[in-house]
Image 1 (cartoon, rainbow, N blue to C red):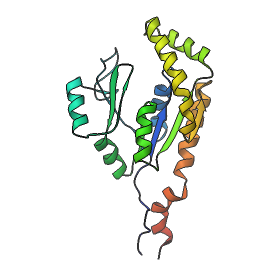
Image 2: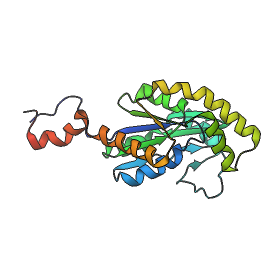
Image 3: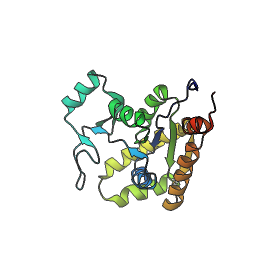
Image 4: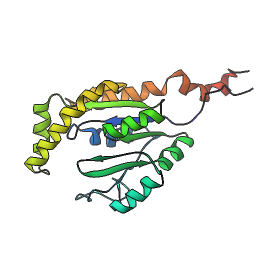
Length: 210
């Protein structure tokens, strides 16, 4: 039996983007507990570590010079500057997991997603939206971590980011968290049932390509 061209058992790349304060990070943390084969990519960043965060778990916290060296070495699948700090996803992280057959979840901004869309054309892109900008402001203020001018900048960025949702495969409005989580779960489940993703497993069982 010969293998079918273009069929590969490599893992699927799931890219999730959203304006700050929409609940994206919490959704991503919950979804990896639901799917045993889903791995969340840990980004590199130049921003300072926040209370409760752990290096290598929440982010790899590196100096601006280390980040610049990685950019020069073309070590990133994508990178971007967001709110004055740099964030990037290492190519090696994605490829090691995908080659092992694991699905990979990326929690990244629209700039990084746009870069990945050019190189990972079989990736699945999901955009999380707030119910509206009034609710988004309420959530940002409720966090109690940002100064008023920072909140205003995040709202302004949200106005710029939200129109980019038209370039994504799926849209989820995070009005009710559990409902949003169920929708994200449904998307990942459905994508796992796509013919092209099922064939590597089923081809040998049913001798599909003899």
